[in-house]
Length: 493
Image 1: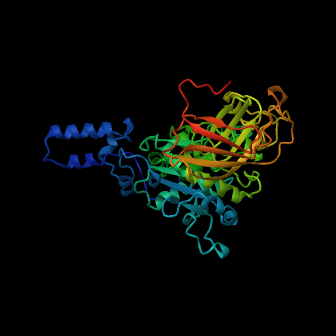
Image 2: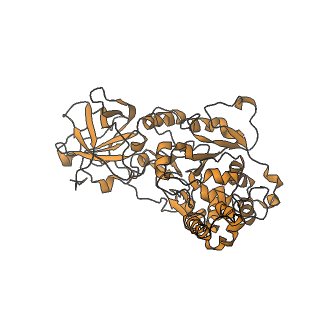
Image 3: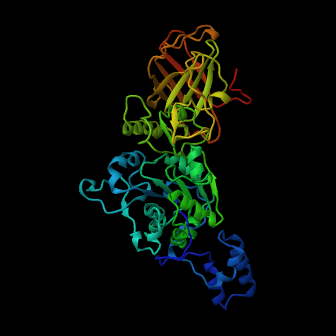
């Protein structure tokens, strides 16, 4: 999003590293000198905001109320209440984007706001409780640098961090998460991933674009705002007094993401990439990408208004709601790819939980199938290479082209209470013959695939699962059971 340092600062809030307890100690003459030294060194070495250049300042600086309530260091696990969402939109497009946010926003549970360019009017009112509360950004025309801004909208977007901070709703906040109004979040997964990091240290977490051209045009080291990125509260607290200065230093920057990257970089903070964030700088049919998601918890998806609906026979809004139907049962498994084999028929099954299932009439190792089928088109025209990852070309060879099935429904197993059953139905006839290299065993009769998975607990992040196939030749239903991989189990044949 944006970045700069302070030359113009309309905020009265000034946040700096400090040790409030030392000010009290210095004023007390009743405490013995040994205790003073003990408390001094305890404070010095335990305070996560201490920098050597700030030591002398600790005796004269004091904590603001926002800091005192927001950066209490505890050992409690990160939960959804620790995340403050800073979502950015505009009145002109809100009615088209609203459904994307409402698909994941949890009323009275998730915290944050949607920041607009002006107060909503007309058919945008009354404002629904199913949407995040709206706020209106401060008028940036008051900034001295405004006439020099090449794209004032992006300055407004980045200043949403400052506007959010000034609301004073920072109690117990550990993370600010920035995103667009059409970013789809998988909040439970986000909580788990952010919980790996120490919010009391400087962290800037996100991902770059799938498009080489986009990264080349802006930066390979930038967290893309459409994918969403997270800033630790410690970093936010340091940034807020510098944001207007950053904007003044970089008036020529065109996008807020680059402004944010630049400002964080100037503080010595570089992007930490988490592969579950997705900018989706792609066009057309992205089913190939979603069917071979990397082995990381899915955090976000973006650009649903730029790609085709991700489910057959559904529009974009319906597709998003349908995917979230699976996510409500088990976010930890959504889009996680599991591969197994029917040895009798020499088939390979690849399941992207909650989204799709593929049946190949050949044996393919995981090293091949983890590469997405390139069903999509590049974000921008130009000379190849286009993508930041390896792909497979779609094929008309019946030994290589998959039978495609898409998620239909999910429910608790009626037979086993510790299992969840998700069902995937055939998209359409493949209209190819059987693979002659593997005994002419055609998968054409299969119309549904039932996938059972453990109902107890979340899938462990970073660990793949294995599976077993049950199928009787000529039947309409194939069954796949997900399970923990055995020690040394090879996903190959």
